[in-house]
Length: 280
Ligand SMILES: C[S@@+](CC[C@H](N)C(=O)[O-])C[C@H]1O[C@@H](n2cnc3c(N)ncnc32)[C@H](O)[C@@H]1O
Image 1 (cartoon, rainbow, N blue to C red):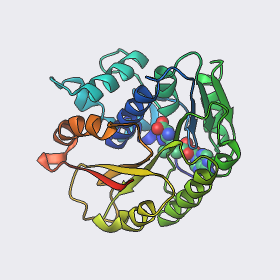
Image 2: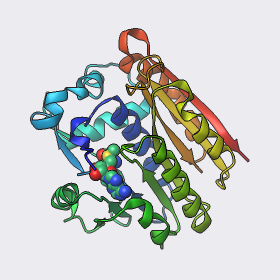
Image 3: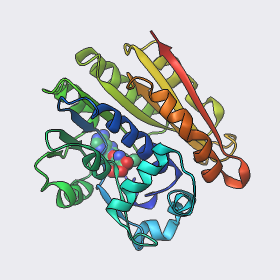
Image 4: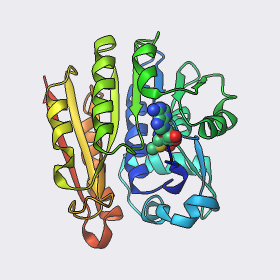
C-alpha cells in the first residue's frame, strides 16, 4: 500500500468530497437524536499544505485555493470554506482538514465518530491529531472488514463515508460493492457516501449498474469533471454515490455544482452531473 493522501490534500476531489460531506452531516444533525459518523478510510485527519508532499504537488492550487478568492459562493460552498477556515485561517493556509476533522467540526457533543485507517503511520497521525476528542474512536484496521462488524451503530442514525485510495483500480469498485452490500443487509436505512474516480466516461458504468440494483431505497450520484473524461491515466473528475441521502439533498447540490464546475474546471472545461440512480 503506497497511497498517501498528503500528496493530494485540498485538490478538486477533496473539495467536492468534503463539501458534500459537510452538507450531509449538516442535514443529518438538523434532527435532535445523536448520530454516528463512520469513516472507513479516514486518512490522517490533518494535512500540511505549506510543507512536504502537498507543497511538492501543488494540487490544492487547483482545488481549495480557487475558492478563497471567489465571491457569491452558494451556501454549501460557503459552509465548506468556513469549515476549512476554522481549521486554518492563514492566507495561504498552512493546513488542510481531512474528512475526520471536518466531520468532527460538523458533529455535536452527543454524536460519535468511528474512524478506520489501515496504514499504521496514518493511523498514528490520526490518533495524534484527533484521538483526544471524546467523541472519537480510531480503529487501525481494514475499513471494509470493519464496516459490517460496526453496523448498525447504537444510535441507528448516521453516515458512512467510503473513500478508498483506488490503488487496486477496478478491483476497488468490487470491494466497495461487496462492503456496501454487506452493510445494507445490516443497516438498510443508513446514509452512505462512496467516492469514486472518473477517468474515462465509461469508468463509472459497472458501478452505476450495481447501484441501480442495490438494496438502498434511494441512490443519488453527484459528479464533478475538471476536464474531459477521455484519458485513463488522469483523474479527470470524481463522483460520490449517495445512498439514502437526506430529503431534498439533491437541491442543495444542484445549487452548488455549477459554481464548483466553473471555479475548478480547467480552461472552462468543468462539468457536473447530478442523477438519481434509484428513487423509490
Ligand atoms: C483517499 S485517502 C482518505 C482521505 C480521507 N477520507 C479524507 O477525505 O481526508 C484513503 C486512505 O485509506 C487508507 N487505506 C487504504 N486501504 C485501507 C483499508 N482497506 N482500510 C482502511 N484504510 C485504508 C489509506 O492509508 C489512506 O489514508
